[in-house]
Amino acid sequence: MVPKPGDVLHVGNDASVQFSGDRALIFRVIKVCDRPTYEGWVWLTGYSIDRAGNAVDRREIYVQRAGLRLIPAATSTAARPSSAPSGRGSTVRKARTPVLPSRRLQ
Image (tube, rainbow, N blue to C red):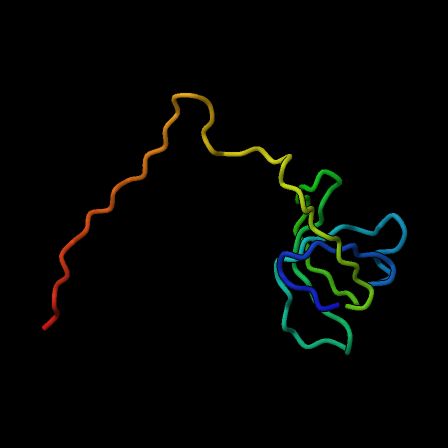
């Protein structure tokens, strides 16, 4: 697997022995470092994620790409609260952008 920013990964023993057993973590990638490494290994910068999906700790980890497991993103957004106004009487007005006459540069 080739990780990319935004991926959420399970990092366990297959990725590196330092993440074996209860030291495994869920990791959200924010950067894939381009430092030279051994074949099949990669430096990742990101956040360890808790069970609620919150970023807990920013980390940089060195892992084997073959041992990383992608966690699929949730496909439903129905549970997320909307920021759009609701209810009767609420109106949303767009600001008008003035149209300026074009000018020729000389």
